[in-house]
Amino acid sequence: MDPLLQLKSIECRYRDHPVVRELSMHVNEGDLVCLLGPSGCGKTTVLRAIAGFEPLHRGEIAMRGKRVSSVGYTMAPEKRRIGMVFQDYALFPHLNVAENVSFGLRGMSNQEKQSVAEHMLGTVGLGELARRYPHELSGGQQQRVALARALAPQPELVLLDEPFSNLDIEMREHLSQEVRRILKQCGTTGVLVTHDQHEAFAVANHIGVMDRGRLLQWDTAYNLYHEPTDLFVADFIGQGVFLSGTLLAPDTVETEIGIVRGDRAYEWQRGTRVKLLLRPDDFVPDQNGELRAEVMQKAFKGAEILYTLRLSTGTNVLSLFPSHQDHNIGERVNVRLAPDHMVAFADHA
Image 1: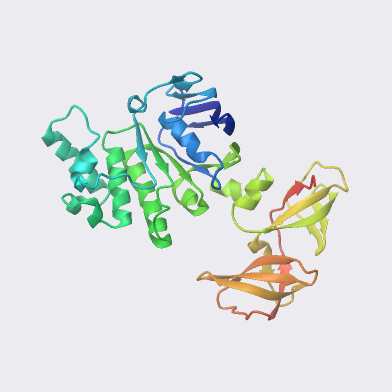
Image 2 (image 1 turned 180 degrees about the horizontal axis):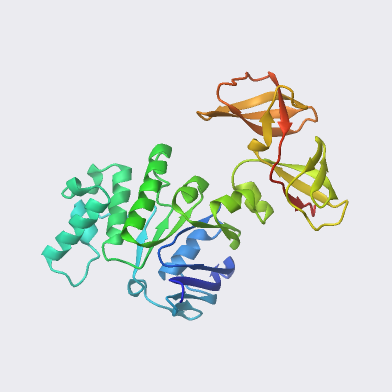
C-alpha cells in the first residue's frame, strides 16, 4: 500500500542556489510528523513544495502513489486536497469566524456551509464565537479558526507552517497538544514545520531534523534524544555538552574527567579521538561524588533546577538537581558521572 505522501530525493533552489538537497521521506495515513530545524534550513521550502507552491529541480512528490510534483510539472495546489495553516493565520478581517471557516468550501449551499462551519468550530472549541471577527479574538483563538478553516474541506493532508510562533510559551504548549488532539480526532494526516523541539515533541509521532537543506535523521523524539546519528542532531536536540576523549575500547572513552564506560560498542580503532555527549541527567548530585564543581548558573524548572557547573578542569557541564537542593552561585557541590547511555562521535577535526 502506498504511503499518503512520499518525497523522493527532491531538490529545490532559489536563484540556482540549492536550499533543499536530496530529501526523501514518506508519511502514512493518520501520521502526525514534523520537520524540525533552525531558521534557513529549508524546512518551509519543503512544506511549500508539498503544497504545490514551490517547483522541484530534482526528484518527485507523490500522494497515494500519484505524482503531484516533478521536474517541469507541478499539480495546482487546489487539486491536491491539502489544507494549510500559516504562521500569520491569514484570516480575512472583513469576514466573521464562521465565514472564514466556510470560505474554502465549494459546491455547497449556504446552509451546508453553515453546518460545516458550526461543526468545525465545535471541534476546535470555538462554537460560541462564530459571529465574532478576527480582531476580536486572541492569538490562540485565531489559530484555532485557521485550523478549522484548513480542516473544513476534509483534506487528506494538513500542513502547518510554524503555527505557534506568534503565541506566548504557555499558550504554545497548550495549543500544540490541542492541535494534536484535534487532528487525531478528525483522523487527518499532518505535517508540522517548526524550529521549536518542544512543539515537535508535543505534536509529532516522527520528526525529521534538517540542517542546510538536508534531512539528517528521521526518527521518534526518544531516539533523536538518546540515539542521535549525527553530531548536529545531538547538539540541536535537548541540552548537553561535548567532552573530547580517546577511545580505549569499543565501549570505553578516556576524558579529562576520567574513564567513561557506556552501553554501546563503537567500531572505531583504539586511540580514535571522539566527542562524547553528556546530558544534564548524566551528572548526578551526590555528596560523595568524585567530581567537585562550582555553581556558575542556575535555572529553576519547578521540580528540578538546571545548574551550570564548572569542573576543576575548567570545563562547564550541565546537571539536574531536585529543586529542594537549592545552591547559590559560587557554591561548591559534588556530582558523580553516571552515563548509562553513551553517545559519541568521531572527532574529525
